[in-house]
Image 1 (spheres, rainbow, N blue to C red):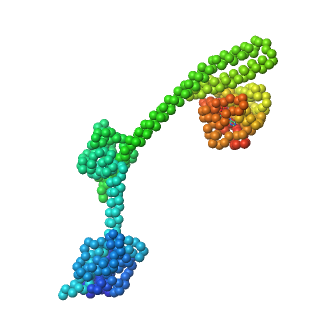
Image 2: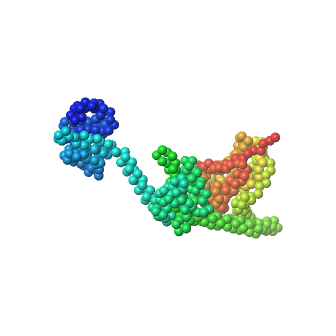
Image 3: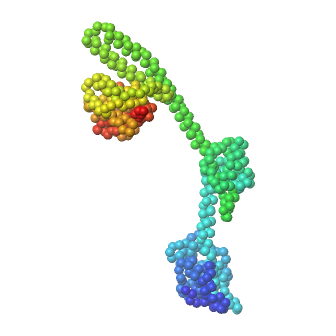
Amino acid sequence: MITKIPANLSSGLLPVELFDCLPVAVYTCDHLGYLTFYNKAAADLWGREPELGKELWCGSWKIFWPDGTPMALDSCPMARALKEGLPVIDEEIIIQCPDGTMKNLLPSPVPLFDQLGVLQGAVNTLLDITEQRQGEKKQAMLAAIIEYSEDAIVSKGLDGLITSWNQGAEKLFGYTEKEVLGKHISLLIPKDRLDEENLIIDRVRNNKNIEHFETVRITKNGQSVPISLTVSPIRDQKGRIIGASKIARDISMQKQSEAQLQKLYDDIQIMNSRKDEFIGMASHELKTPVTSIDAFLQLVQRSLKLEDKDKELVFKARNQVAKLISLISDLLDVTKIQTGKLPYTFTSFDFNDLLKEVIEVMQQNHPGHEINLDHPAGMLNVYADKQRLEQVIINLVSNAIKYAPNTNKMRVAVLEAQHRLQLSVQDFGPGIELPEQEHIFSRFYQIKKPSGNASGLGIGLYISKEIIDRHQGKIWVESSPGKGSTFSFELPLQLQN
Ligand code: ADP
C-alpha cells in the first residue's frame, strides 16, 4: 500500500511498517499538497485508499464543516497548514466514507521545513472522535429530557444530599435548584414518614429499584402532595453505587378521581342494598294478604254451591293468586340469598322418586304438553333439600313450557356416572344466543318477557343456580338458536356404606 517514503521521514530511523502498526491515522503531503504517504489506520478511517502523488491534501471521500455544510477541498485543515505554513490546531471536521458512514475527526496538520526553512510538505494525524461526539449528543438529549420532564427528577448521594434538581421538581415542590442543591432530601419528607428515607437508601445500597411507590411529600409552602415515586441506584464509572435518582409524579388528580369513583361505588352499593331491602320488605308485606286471599278463595270454592260458571271463575282467580304467591316467594328467596339467609333442610332421599312426582304434577297441570321422562331404574340417593330441588326442576320445566311456545314436546332425562347424577331438561323451542347464555343465570336478567299468561321476573335461573351451588353441584345450558335448549344440572350422589 505504501509506495513512497517521504524524504523527510526516510532518514532510516523509522521503517514504514512501524507507521502501519500505529493505531493513529497519519499521512503526509508534499509542498504542493499531493499525498505522499498514509498508513493503514488512515486508509481505514477514510474507508478508501487514495492514489499517492495524484490526490491533493486529504484522502477523505467527502469533507464537511462541523455544522454539516460541505467543505471545499482546498479549505481543509491540511491545505491551510501548507498554504499558511502554520499548524492547524483544534479544528474539527466531518468526513463521509464511500459506504456513507459519517465520522467526526480532529486533524492536526503540521508543516515540515528543511534546514534552510524551505517548506517540504506536511504531516497530519487524524483522531476519530465520532464516539465521543455521539456520547455527548446523547448526554445532551438526556439532559434536555430530564430538564423539561413534567415529572420531578432529583438525584442525591448516599448521604441523602440533593445533587440535581430539574424544572419538574421545581414546579412540584416549589424550591428552585439553587435553594435545594446540597440540602438533605428529608426537606421534602413529612415528619411521620422520615423512616421511608432509610428504607429507600437501604434498597438503593442493595442495588434494588423502587417502582411506583405511592407516598406523600411536602412542598415549599407546607402543602402535602400525593406522589408516585420511582427510585433507582446511580453508579460511577467503576460500577459502584454512589447515589440514587428519584422520579416523583404528582398523583393528586388520580387520587381525586379514585376517591370520586369510590364514593360513586359506595353510593351505588347503598342504593342497591336499599333496593334489596325494599324488595324484601314489599314481598314480605304482600305475602300475608295474598295468602289470605287464597285461603278465602279456597273457602268459597269448598263451602258455596256455585253455578259451574262461577266455579270456573273462582278456579281462575285461585290460579292467578298461585302465580302471585310464586312470584312473591321467588322475590323473598332472592332477598334471602342476598343476605345469605336462604334456609336449607338437608335429608337423604331418592332423587328418582322426587323427579317422578314433580313431573306427574307438571304433566297434570299442563295437559297440552308431552313430557318424556327418561331415568335409570333403581334408586338415586342424594343428601339434599328436597323442596329446593323440586323448585329447580319446576323452574326448568316451566321455562321449557314458557319459552318454547312453538312446540308442546320436551324431554327430561337423568344420567348417573361417577357418583354423580345429571338431570337435563330439553326443549325444542327457539334456543338462546351464545352471548345471552353467559348472563341468564344472573339476577333479574331476562332475554324477553314471557308471553301470554306466563309470569317471570328474571330470577328463576338465578335462584336455581344458587340452590345447585349450595349442593356442590353445577348448572349450565347448551343451546343454539333455532335448535332448542337443554338446561342441565349435576349433583353428587350420596355414597352408600
Ligand atoms: P324468569 O324467572 O323470568 O322466567 P329465568 O331466570 O328463569 O327468568 O330465565 C331467564 C331468561 O332466560 C328468561 O328471560 C328467558 O328469556 C331465558 N330462558 C330461560 N329458559 C329458557 C328456555 N328454555 N328457552 C329459551 N329461553 C329461556
